Image 1 (spheres, rainbow, N blue to C red):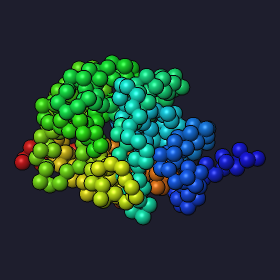
Image 2 (tube, helix red, strand yellow):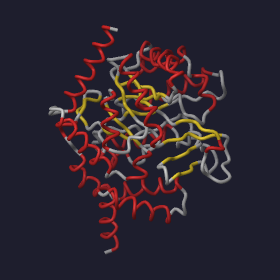
Image 3 (cartoon, rainbow, N blue to C red):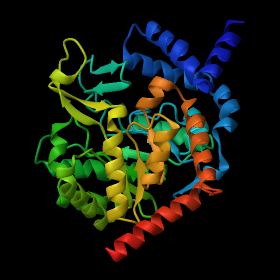
Image 4 (cartoon, helix red, strand yellow):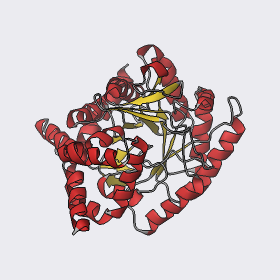
Length: 384
């Protein structure tokens, strides 16, 4: 009796964003005593516990005329962003809902990250601040989960977020050895990779943000992951940093990369973090305020690199924002923070809005609209 009631509540939480916000999310925070990370861990456990329920509702999340091509597969254009499933603990249930998955960021050695509390939630503005410091169970834990996913017939493409971390600024060789080990071990399970040098809380990564290191990293990944999608997670930038940002993307593509994921969280100082006794000098801020940075990055990348593959992320919390990102030139969309506030029922809501917007313009399929966006970008690049 109790189990059946739990199943019904879980199902409604998946399908109904209002129920998720008003009941499921509040209940989860009560059970976790207000700890955002504990809520996240609870959500992953429940996804696995009720995977059969997730599979039952999955058809409502599939809109065939919105399918896009990702590494040779025709899938929904909505995916998980890095951080939502760091260790691949819920690959199978998430694959029923999302067109593609970006698990990770995976690192070689197990990392505890920074001490808790290291995540703060601003409910009023729908924002999350994190200073997690790359916590991860490590490569071999992830390999077990990825192998299980493939053995169970998981079909959603895996674009695995990876990073070799220098032990300190300037010591690159260890980072590249780790990157090569990650590629060697993960290639059998990956449909693509997302190199992540823009974590705002890992100081040693800043030294990798040069055209030389972007080119070298792209070349390393291209050599090891031939035939797979090769993307880089880019951070946000202001207009006066545009050329430097484009120079990094140019170096990435020149080295053999295919495109970008944009944008990562925005680093803010301690005094701007809405949390008492925050123990870190800064944090990565995510949420609706990233919309402008996301749009700027997607437009600039599509204009400068018309053939690149672009996944947009950052503040995609409604059908309107999903549509805006696609209009700017995104090939696919991913998210994490919006689902923590609205639940996975946000997915069909966004898909329905995009579908209606396409039909209002006379398009039968998203791929047709995207082809026109790409042709226009190429034409502008050629005439410009």
